Length: 334
Image (cartoon, rainbow, N blue to C red; front, side, top):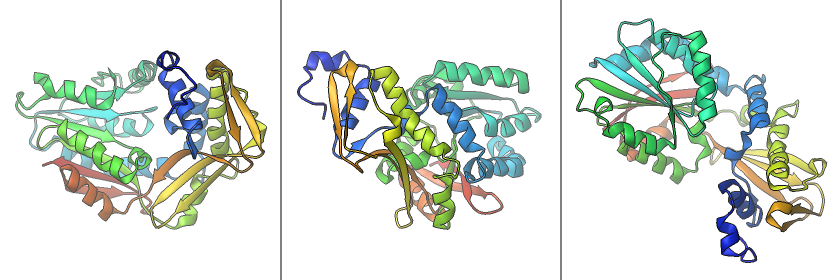
């Protein structure tokens, strides 16, 4: 809970970012949300991470799309006159471009609808695809995932009131792994509720494998993942007028095979105090104290089928890279 030393009227004036930072740093144990990693510098660092030799996830899913783009097109276009390809959090669109480039060369028309809370991210994505796939029918939607999906469902041209139109949601890049088990189930349930019967979900997730392969992917030799995590402290310094000394903090991650969880932490290298000047708060750290920043969960194919079934989806088909590191699973709303 946010400290009672802040008057309620002061708390109400705080931005969501400021409230979350304060609540997280005053919690026991301390925590910060990974959704705040992605300021300009954080986004640049993550682009570097995706190209690291240790970080296999992006390459694996890219390989899947290159190998199965025709198979996916046949599934998406089966028994329909057109379809809407709705992507949740498209990022830079590098992997999705493999599918889009292939699909626009086919006979069946379709619309690409990326949903993102950031208008700037959608603008950058549109600029990219205007250059690389100029004939793409692009309709970006700014907003929260479920709010946008609910609006799409009620519109005639995105619902079953228009005959032979299918909605296909892409949730790629192992984003589902950032949720806990219960959160994953609830997320997929909400997704199913905001889609029509026989609509599809293409869900990307990282598979369980040798623990060392996973461990190395989240703690690279060049320290880019460390810099990515510590950049969040720099953001707090800038936006909350804090005085985190970055040299006094470290990064630690661990993989737990039994639960399939990679857990990432920022670690205090000293007993110290950090002042959040804008919030008029002082945060105390013990030596070795951690700030939990992220969970990245790995699944077996069986586990994901079970979760999807509970959420209201039925299994259609699955696709893996040549090493069996990653999976994209095609699911249909029951």
